[in-house]
Length: 491
Image (cartoon, rainbow, N blue to C red; front, side, top):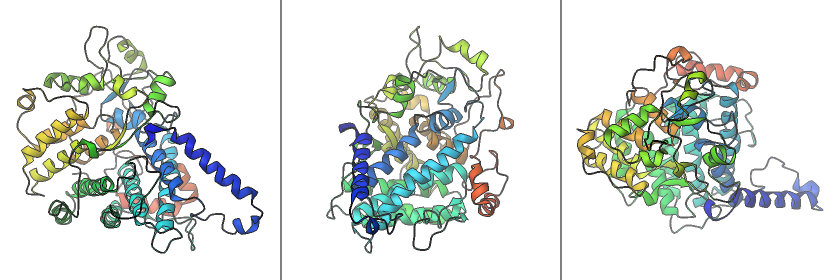
């Protein structure tokens, strides 16, 4: 696992060694007959590279104009606020570089590596291994889900084909509905391929080669996506949920926090937590806790705030409003809580999906009539799991303060539990409209006509390299290429 060794250095050295060996071979022409071969580097090297690059980018990234979570999503959902540089996300302004760098990074550093593993590990590949193939299908699906949930229609069915026997350099865009159908099918296929009695894998820095946990992640992720599309395709989503929940032996799901999908980081640089790199190693103090989050948690007596934030000089946990101009926001430096030490320590986990989130998904599905389970039981289990994730116990009067179980309450608690996972919280806010945020501060200044961004615009590179298809993609989204067009699953 990432926390046990410096994987960035280890895998970089391994890849460099392979490339050095290749360049020094006497049989140079034979080695270079297919320079784009996806099997030139083994899955044991491609897997950790793809996992780390994708999760690091999703969680934060350490480079300015790459930080899609802490400079966009965590601000949009009012977990974070800024005390300076409000125009980097807090006022809804987005740099063209941020949307372009993340589009490129998720495709090139994540998806391409997972696709190479799938090709070489397939039954007809050069190194058949069903467990590598299954793991790569799960990770490829997760990254595609991030992209389509952030941008809308994306290259999917023809994507990642630039090095195939019949290369496609200008892939068509598929609608979100088509992408979701493909992702749900791939997760079912991944579960079928993953076998605890199958071949071993190495280089797995997410689950340490534990195939059962990969199966649980695959099926839990499938429930996430089925629930997300349920408002648009209720019959199909209900069938998927019934299939998974009706056969826990064939379709295992998360059963405790021990199953959480989270990348373990290390105190050894550069394998440290991305937030640690930005906020501690690089000394950036641009972010505080949003007053929206702090006020809600304080009102509930929610002790998770002692993990999410650091107390100010008066020992209080408080934030300030989002969207304030720099001249106003800097006045809160002495009183607004900074991001909690738990989250900025070098070895803090980078979380992808949790047992708590799964229970909130099931609670919502039960309330909507998509499954037959007990919504209240799922809801309370989700809250308990979130507190336990931080070694905390739910306060005795907490559930009373939360109140009756409704869809709004489920999504509100999910929003609190998703602290750190800004992209997921942003997606759920855009999908459901919950939680309902307080009115903007009178001093706040927002761009995008004050509308919470509904999506990211496509990068300029798509218009220069794949213009016809990106324009078709805009049409599939049903609106302009702006940050106000609602995405397919919006309820």
